[in-house]
Image (tube, rainbow, N blue to C red; front, side, top):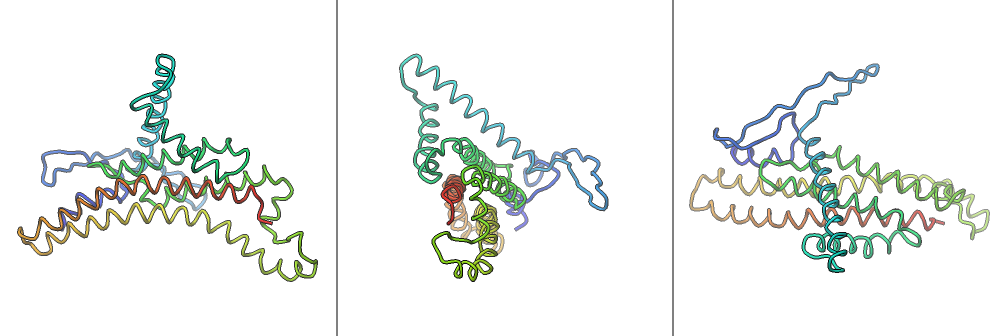
Length: 281
């Protein structure tokens, strides 16, 4: 059981060390990350030392930047030579166009092109962060609730700013329930009841984004850990192939889930932006 934990749990737990292959028992060695002096703000102590998940986020951001820039350069060069992109650039172009045309614009609404770069950035960044957790000695940064909460909070601010920009003074109606098509007496009775619900809905949206991504990216690794743990629990070589094959199948499914969760996060972000731009009342 300890061997399976050595291989699986580092993918979902954070630490101040990076794993790398070596010839020691377990084939895992640790590279200690630098520890910086914490920042003291009154009684609050903030540790800004880099962790494994921070490194994975930086790697994901770098891979995202390099992939899209290289694809853009190849796209420009190939269009200049033959009038169409091909290979890697064509695949990235197809993915970007699909997310933009089929996910973002239909949900964000009229004149929503300005929000496409933000949502596309979310999609590719989350995708690379998810996939990094599936490679040996990697780590799933999106399996950290702090990471998913930060992404959700950033999305929350974009959603609210989109509402302010589109609705102007009418933005207050997304907070205070006051429909213009109802009698005054109905509004006076319903407003004290519905306004807290409107405020709660603003909080539950980023909460749902954070928990959904965190739970889905953590669950797959836990299932793999449980399946591999069966090998050590039963202690039988005859039963070992079955849990191993099942764990392998879950890992293949995890590749699909990595794409799916990036897609769902981008989809929900687009839907939330579109809802507030239309105005709730």
